[in-house]
Image 1 (cartoon, helix red, strand yellow):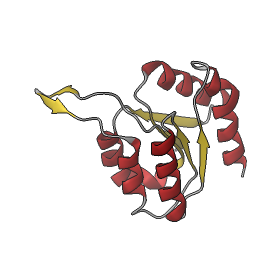
Image 2 (tube, one colour):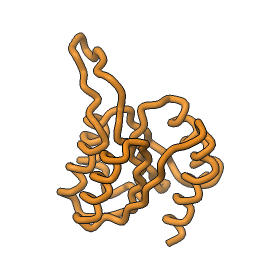
Image 3 (spheres, one colour):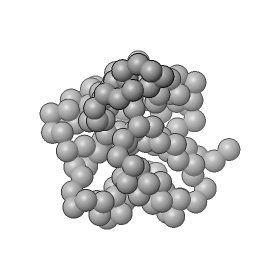
Length: 142
């Protein structure tokens, strides 16, 4: 089984750029991307031990319709709340422009023993290729 990177990102352009960078830099890694917190949490309940690195956004967009009902995508902090109940098994990158939300996620994960790095997105998608993937490479090499 390939190594697995799990990402929480609701922006399709960012998600695709992240997927491409992982595929290019780490061809032996698989990448799974979630656009909402509840789907990621459900998946993590059975799969957290398979993950070698996570990258989490905080703000996940507006409510939408799902199965004929209003669906709230949640926020990255919802995933962090779940991770706080789990044994720390991999590094986590928090990628968000939401200063207070991102800081809260980082502090909660660090308090629970997770290794955490933080990046604030900038310059459209260039931060993914120029900074985000470098952080991933450094964390994986450690």
